[in-house]
Image (cartoon, rainbow, N blue to C red; front, side, top):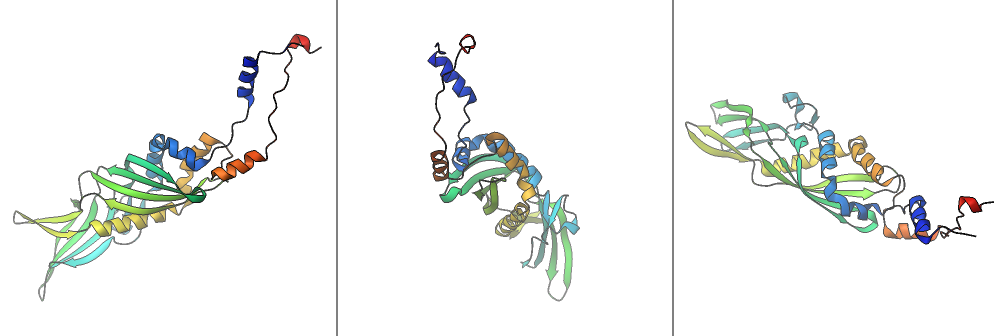
Length: 258
């Protein structure tokens, strides 16, 4: 009985053998850089164009969380109504860390061309009253901004594979300093950096609570890795231990089958 050559047999087996389902967090950590375009697309669709007091004219789609802040500072009443530009992020750096039980933490630096905040500023003098000095979205905070984000996610062995996405950190590089010009002189009215970071954190997390917002990401992962994944190496090892051993079968040439 004549057999195919060993090289032919190995080649055939490599074609028909079913690949071992991957440990998803470990796999993603090795290909994370290639995910930048898809994550940018997720941001475009998952994040609103603006968040804040939508009735004040925030660009659509707008997520209504009320005014970003309203403070009194140096004889001025400052009200920030909404911020926009969050859905125009460009991913600069990306790192994925794998924790216990398939948990994942992503550190990412993103850039936005602008982060405009709609402001209403009234100048107030005790016993005299207030006058509107500024009412626009162009005073603060133009120019390219870089934001450092921290994101947690959990792995599921049933679809959708990436769940419970939570933004844990949003740090704006530099400051969102509200500056006014009066009689040709510029002066700082209020540093909105800390409170803007807090509101961005709350607004993005509110958006991420909707599982449909991450459908694009999970669909892409399923397209890459199929319908079976593991969240830990231990789960993959246990699965493989239960599989029947693979045997090399004798493969007859067509003229020897009879």
